[in-house]
Length: 389
Image 1 (cartoon, rainbow, N blue to C red):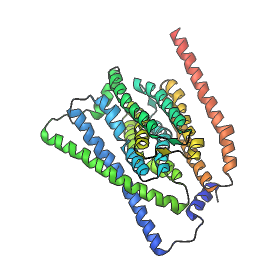
Image 2 (cartoon, rainbow, N blue to C red):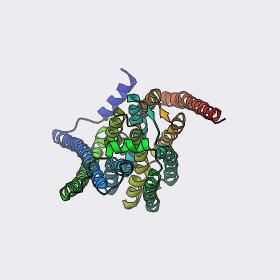
Image 3 (spheres, helix red, strand yellow):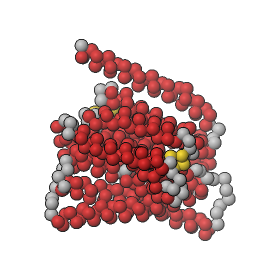
Image 4 (spheres, one colour):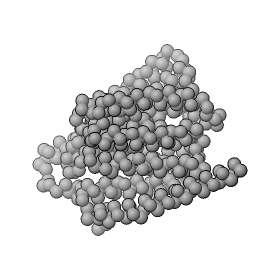
């Protein structure tokens, strides 16, 4: 039997006797609530984004600003709801794992899938500025987490950053090319009606979306805690995998649909903007609201947060090499996400193959990828220098 299958079997076995029928039925009900909670989160995010986008358009806000702020932030609302609910419920590991796991998922999985559908050419000026910003904020989060906790004043500083970032987006949006503005106008330019009925309906969408997010987050967090205990894995692992992927589904839908329509800037900008929002708003507000801040487990500090930073850095040479993400680069991103999830499974079960797998990744796969990307970066810089001369 393959090692991967053995690892999954060990998790499902959970090294404990079968539970009584009553306990099994209770766990089944919690699992159903988890699934329903996830559905409510996705539906709530969709309703919230739709209502908020139309309200912004009716207020005369440009489609570009709507796409960069309302939509990018709205698709991250499930992460915000789940992380705040987790922190207030005392499950800080889920809150942190959700943010870190979502950022890793957004880059490796969503950009990977989108690039496989259609090579992504980045014309948007903001993306070129936002990628270094995403890297810098990721490093700042690591610095805050070094003492094992992101405390309230650090959360307040992060949350203040999202306000400054939003102002920066609005100002910089005026400098975008007409091509990028038309792309956003095509996607978010509808719904400019100013009738009272339309205003009330869109306000109802926003309120209803928020209510669904609150209810869905509560059920998802409660169910996730039970699943973690049932399978014998940590809440951090659940947050990094199931919850991170589940709460990122709105970003998956937005980016894939944008890629299919040829709206490449929206596909990329949605991911980068969402990652920045996750770090500044989601993690910041969660740390601010939690009574003792958000605790950072040693495993996250030693591995998962550095992986998040490494993933963010990996996008930098890609955005500079012709400002495009080719299909082979998308495939590389997807492969790395599978490798990351496989490592988490092997580590959770302490599988015999963990040491060999870790050694192969650390001393062969990662250095080879780094050399390849560095070579492409140097070639592009030489090409740009030759064109300039």
